[in-house]
Structures are given as C-alpha cells and as structure tokens.
Length: 181
Image (cartoon, rainbow, N blue to C red):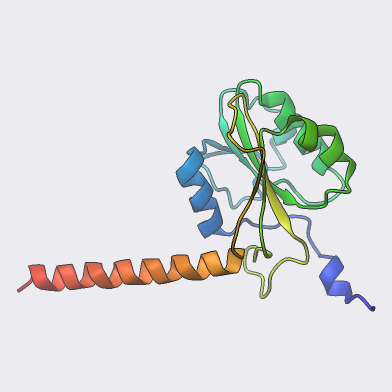
C-alpha cells in the first residue's frame, strides 16, 4: 500500500483545535489557561512559544492543552502530569498509543482517557487530520471511568450540533417575529 505524503506529514506541528470541540469541553470543564497557544488562543490566559508554557506555573488552573504535535509531546504531557497535583489539565493529543509517553505518563497516571471516534478537522484544513485523536485528563479529581469512547463518529456529533444550532436559530427568529407582532 502506498501512503500519500500529505497524509503523514505537515508543514506545521501546530493544529488549531476546532472551536466547536473546544466549546464542548469548555462547557464541561471551564478552562482558565491555554499554555500552548500559537497566537490563536482559546482562553483569556494563554502562553505562546515566547512565554514557553513549559516553564510557567499551571498549578491553580483548569488547563486546555493542545500541544504542538511533534517530538516534544512527551515534555508537555510530563508537565501536565506534574501540574495535576493542583490543576486539571485536559489534553488533546494524537492517539498513538505506541508512543512511550502513553506508557510513561498517560496509562499509569491519567484520570481519564477519551478515545475520539473518527478524525477531527483542525483549523482551516480542507479535510480531517491524518491521525486519530484522544482527550487525556490529568487531575487531582477522580473520574468514574478511566477509559471512555464516543459511541458515534465525531463528524456525526458535529453534524448534529450544527442541526441543533440551526433549529435554535430558527426558533429564536420565530420568537422575535412573534414578539414584533
């Protein structure tokens, strides 16, 4: 089987989290910090490469972390683990369970791992990512389930969300029209 080069490589190691997916997680956790911002931050408090989030204190935060994908993911996950004694860190990472950081930090210490069914479409990309993703949660809090999977494709969930928002917009328009009568 021949692999298409564009499917396994990228010009950047920064993949912007889809806003709707971040919003879904933010509704659940209430994030206060984005330590790996590429300038398009998801939280009011954020660190860019200039501030180097790996050198900052996260201990009192609720963190959303989508680390730069590449050779340093393990460093970001170790930082997440270290900070999780006081902070909750929700990590969006590549679901490559053969990587050593999965065995060194995630499997033994994560409070919850959520495997995403299907592939996310990051940023302004024309298509979905060439990799599967997972949500890894480090926290002082215990979760009922260690391993969670989404029973339907992320793309179906996204389609449903779009339809729900459209229905809500239409309902709002009808209410506004009725109020103007």
